[in-house]
Image 1 (spheres, rainbow, N blue to C red):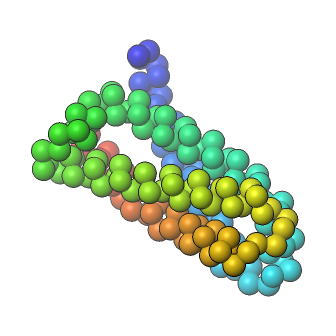
Image 2 (cartoon, rainbow, N blue to C red):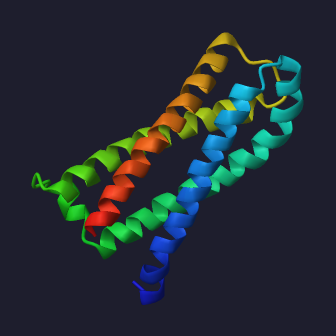
Length: 153
């Protein structure tokens, strides 16, 4: 793999992580602060699609650069054959959390895309809110394990 890709993968990964987590925190605060249903109906149809596509692009770049970094630091062998070391444990936990986070993001994105500007069913509302909250919480844990991995590497 080109050396410039290896060199920039970490920086791009970090930039996308900041964007991803910062956006998640912003949308969480927006969701908590907009208690008025009418205000939500005015804001979300405009902000949601822009945020959703940006976050989807960020996630794709995060996953791609994560794979590049995994090859760069030979981390995939630790995933396949965990050895109980601090880096092996942190990598395994982060990978599991990222997988759950990715599924939650897909669920949330699909519901949001299909229902933008429309009334949601009770189940759509439940799964949209639950996935959104799960994404927010998992981001904090993923960030923790990312910091642990970076300290070790």
